[in-house]
Image 1 (cartoon, rainbow, N blue to C red):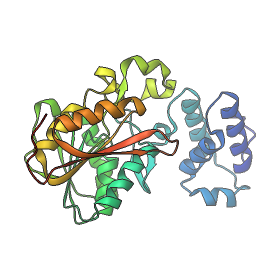
Image 2: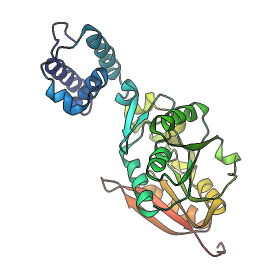
Image 3: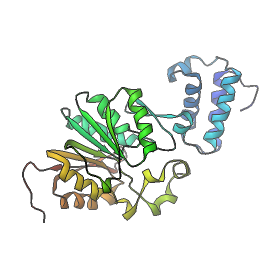
Image 4: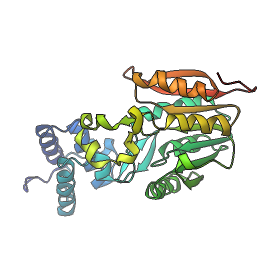
Length: 290
């Protein structure tokens, strides 16, 4: 950042141009986010304070953050948080950054199950799903599990910050069974096939945890186990909700669900028209498997 620049608007424009020149997506929003964070002001205030001079400390902090972002560190990791369903979620390199499409998963559950009493979030990561659900369903008891203790630690901080009580467990779901039954089981599991890693943006591939992104068996590794757990540990009439990787996952995931005895499989699409969410129900009466 050139040293003579001190006014907010001049620094904002310089960072925007710099980010645009090096190919960062949404350069203006990235620049705004950094300045909002450093000055601790909302976006609207930023545009009401264009002539505000930034202190040396502010400018030095911005220089450091601009270098990090230019080096490919995701903007959410640079500022230390992401926005998810109206909540501020702490993110670190130990957890996957919450995605906009995952908000659809939360929205569908809230729309369809406003009276849910117990929800289990499998592979909770930052805790964003469980926290968003718990925040909007104050009478629902929330449970969450993840294999990584470092992820659980981040999720616990997020729950505390957002005032949501959640019962946490650190477990490998392939070697674990819940102690309770649930109205809803939800999961955004790793679903990117390992061979697709080179197609990902470098900032995702290099800075987000591989364990939260990639899965064996063409990205389908976790769905049979999720179906098994749901068939046994959902209450009768309970519902499993999952995020999937797109059209190529619809048919095999549906077969996993049906093989486990789950019924009424439905598919929901993200804002780009890609199949992104699937749900299946546990029957209220015993079903025989084919």
